[in-house]
Length: 245
Ligand SMILES: *[C@@H]1O[C@H](CO)[C@@H](O)[C@H](O)[C@H]1NC(C)=O
Ligand SMILES: *[C@@H]1O[C@H](CO)[C@@H](O)[C@H](O)[C@H]1NC(C)=O
Ligand SMILES: *[C@@H]1O[C@H](CO)[C@@H](O)[C@H](O)[C@H]1NC(C)=O
Image (cartoon, rainbow, N blue to C red; front, side, top):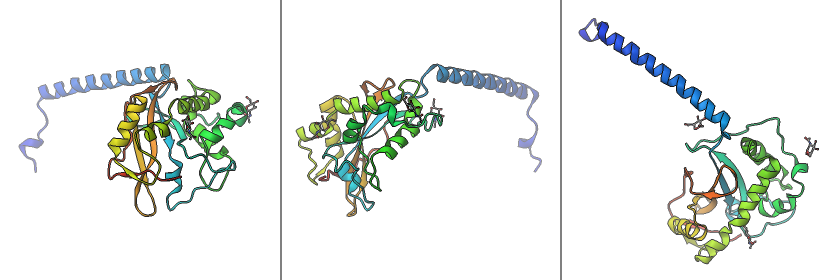
């Protein structure tokens, strides 16, 4: 067991190993300082995902959906959320427990939110639970840039700039229960709005894959669409159903 390979390192090699060890430690310390510096000077995230969902797919699963107290939403994409994200794909969440959702702060936006950001979760409710979740989990992480009112308003503004349903329908992709290939959907949106989306899917009770959500990316100000620095896991195959709603 006491073989050649287990002998202590020669002194020269040990010194070399020691000094490169110190250099490594110093580099790591320097990197740590730099990263703290950039986080405290920056906004704590790199960009947003702006996520819209197709209500027909949300509802067409074994899990039921419930229409909001305001009634069945229009057959249109609706907002799921505006999510601060890092370029490396991970994301911050629940950043400020001292900043609860407060409907009074966005009372002027609630009418629009009922149309463009309705809840489909059960039991039927007015949206408060959904918006509370979105603000507290995601919105609090971009609070240094967008306060509560600006955050919800930013999402509504982007939704208004991007009429996904029209862009798809203009390309012959309609919510008619037919199946469409992912590149066809992606390219129609890219051609219509100028930015590459990511399409995610779910599976209905007959095991058909269907278009569930469309991700677009927005710069850290919450104003302008950008090409995504990083895509979520996309649904590439098989062809996706676009269900009637
Ligand atoms: C991603 O980047 C963020 C911010 O720079 C960092 O806090 C986080 O640890 C990184 N996550 C991974 C998995 O690299
Ligand atoms: C909600 O916001 C309003 C308007 O800013 C403020 O007056 C009120 O104190 C807030 N409520 C809570 C529970 O924080
Ligand atoms: C769908 O939503 C867009 C905004 O994203 C809006 O411009 C359009 O009028 C809506 N279409 C219908 C049919 O409700």
